[in-house]
Length: 212
Image (cartoon, rainbow, N blue to C red; front, side):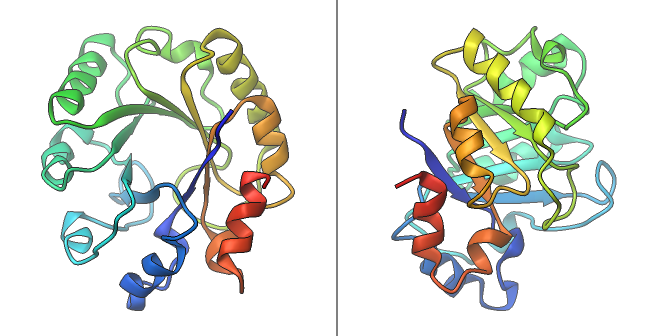
């Protein structure tokens, strides 16, 4: 199973963001952009204007940690991003979930749904077959540098068993020690922030995550 590595620029040096992106382009598969609104999570982070100033050949993966994902779609769809993920905890009813997924697809992007550490897989049974990606959060959303929560691997195993072709992404505290367990559980897209951007050799760090 091919494993994609998706560095999160949350841990990059924002004062030199273009150079930071260029440093991982030869090695990574996607780039994740964590969008925080100060409501769903207490922190604030990127918006589309920041991304408009960054040039990259890598697909952009937008992780919406916001209270109003439907209101934020257009700004990112206009950038022709690869994937937009919203949180199951924010949009809980089936109708609005399906409408949001449809809007993302119509905008030309993949659609993902994210599960915070305490949110069960069963909570997305209504739309799991409609999304392209399920993001299993292995830390509580909002801040980079948290310690990996191993109990979430059971959710990864359950998802892989029931959905053998689905892209399953794991995000939070993923480093060289944790990555093999994520891959073994069935994850095929690993997000990592500090482990990559704090490394002296970022290419080697990414290869370690990949298991190469």
